[in-house]
Length: 153
Image (cartoon, rainbow, N blue to C red; front, side, top):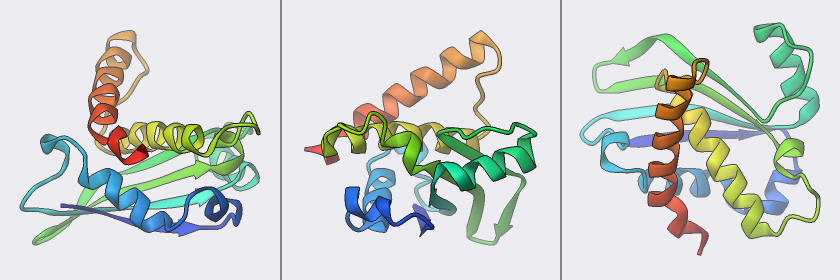
């Protein structure tokens, strides 16, 4: 089972997504079976941030002085404590997700779910540097999104 520890440093998130922790854990509980880690306790941290703070992190850790939609920091060695596995951290920028500003709440949530899935796959060491890797990752993103989009209804 996957558990997401959700932290927020940007107040605007709570205006768009009520009960963020419940929202993101519900997404994970609707992942396809192969990504739910049945009979294991898998967890990671999600930081709901903004452009200013994600830019600082992007500059510090990736040497890119610009904001971005999502950053993922998979642990190189997965922390295993008997029954628990810690995957790493995901950071999502509210400002990036909230463009254009006239997005409906439904469209905002859909965009967030898609980027959350993208970040999650990075924690599992999926990548998109090469075209073949991109295609594999994109297919997995689509499969996961199809299984979780029902929570948008």
